[in-house]
Length: 315
Image 1 (tube, helix red, strand yellow):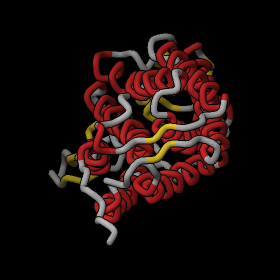
Image 2 (tube, one colour):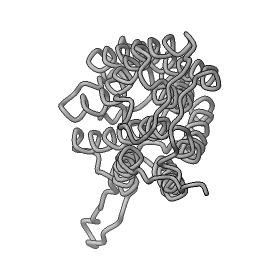
Image 3 (cartoon, helix red, strand yellow):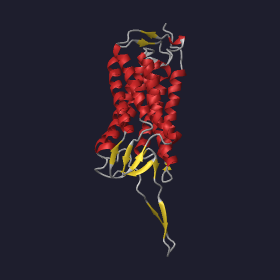
Image 4 (tube, helix red, strand yellow):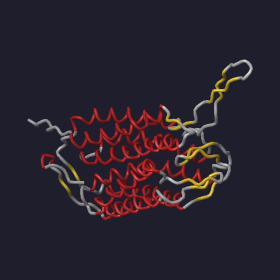
């Protein structure tokens, strides 16, 4: 990522060695995430699942690793360090909940068997076997969490500042980000792709009855680690939506918003992939809202990158 246009007055100072380590961890997380795309993810109820099924599945699964790897490479090279640190810190916070949900899927999801949608497949969690894709994905999330912790530790010791050209529009960006964050949580609570209700006709009377079919569980309907992970994910989305636009300098706000944008967009694309890949599923309103929220965060990221106003002159 370039350091910024000349009118930013960007000042780069000392960056501790922890910055480069955090960048290296992001690169490794990106590589592990890409490895996780194509091998077997989980074998659930005897049915093999993989994230790499079709172009949509590859795009949804590879988006976050690709962006993380690119940002980590720049951070490891020492370019615009607070941009990369902001991305790493926000991505790490979001990954904690995702990591707990992944651990639940491969360990205790069979304690209370239920219908789930995993990698575009509608499965029953009667039994679960771990695949290479799951291991690589968990390694990627764990490395992202570690990178985020190092980024938070290195933030105060990293010198990077500008003239405050984004300051006049920060309140508007923050307000929009909070609205998108709350909307994202509301969309995450319900499945992005669900099983439609079935209409049954009585052959004698001709009376039609709507029969509900078992569909995937919502984010907060799962027990144990999955519930804790869902709560942490929801809290992190809202909290990071509040904090990201306030980060200084401008490029740090861009980095924080970018991390939210890619995670939310990936979740929205995964929901669309699930609905398209399976004839048993249909795309839901929350799924569409999740994709729109991801696009909204992308727009805010672009605005934070492009909007610059000269700070008020001091008398």
